[in-house]
Image 1 (cartoon, rainbow, N blue to C red):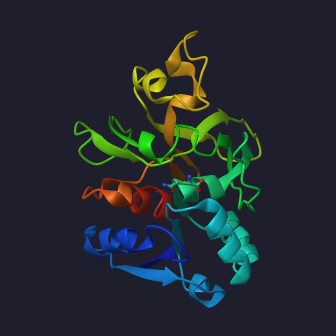
Image 2 (cartoon, rainbow, N blue to C red):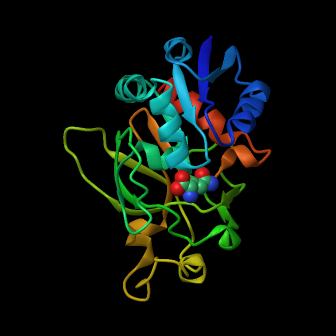
Amino acid sequence: GVTIGVLALQGAFAEHINILTRLKISHLAITPLLVKTPDDLQRCDALIIPGGESTTIALLAKLAGLLEPLKGFVKEKPVWGTCAGAILLSEDVQGAKKGGQDLLGGINVSLERNGWGSQVESFEAPLAVHGLRDPDTPFNGVFIRAPVILELKTDPSRPPIDILARISPPLLPAVGSGSVSGSENGDLLDDDRTVVALRQGRLLITTFHPELTRDDRFHDFFVRNCVYGG
Ligand code: GLN
């Protein structure tokens, strides 16, 4: 079996636990675990960092003595970050709303917090996701003050980045009322800002919230591909 922790300091951790509890992968016993302390983390084979407020999560992690253990965990084990979790797994945050939070790093991207706009500009979009079970059924992407990935960086010393989903180009100018701009030129399919889910080795980020749907296919993907590498 496999113990999958969910960082439970702030944000949508209960929703991840619910999906993990229901997830059925043949012959595999999945034990979900709320992670609040370094001891909890040590029991985990993999970790999910939920959506919420990345600044708050980082601050609470520091207070709980979890920051350094988390940085170590990310270097060795499978980790998936959703929305705020994706911010924490990025190596670099840019723009006015940077937030100054400690980052765990691990994923070679730079991103912008709240890059799609404010809470009222939250939106949902059907996504075609590469590698999910039942690939012809779109995945409903729920974007809530989501980060925008600004740039994928190549780092030859790290595993390659595998783009799993892009937001379909017509949505980009429509929702990009915040700082996403300049999309009128060039091919949006080559624009890093359209990338909303990617995998880099054992690490996975989604800028949206699969835990806020009833669709368990991303959790299934994480366990099958990042945890078991198959
Ligand atoms: N805007 C949040 C942050 O910067 C992320 C929002 C979310 O997780 N829904 O951390």
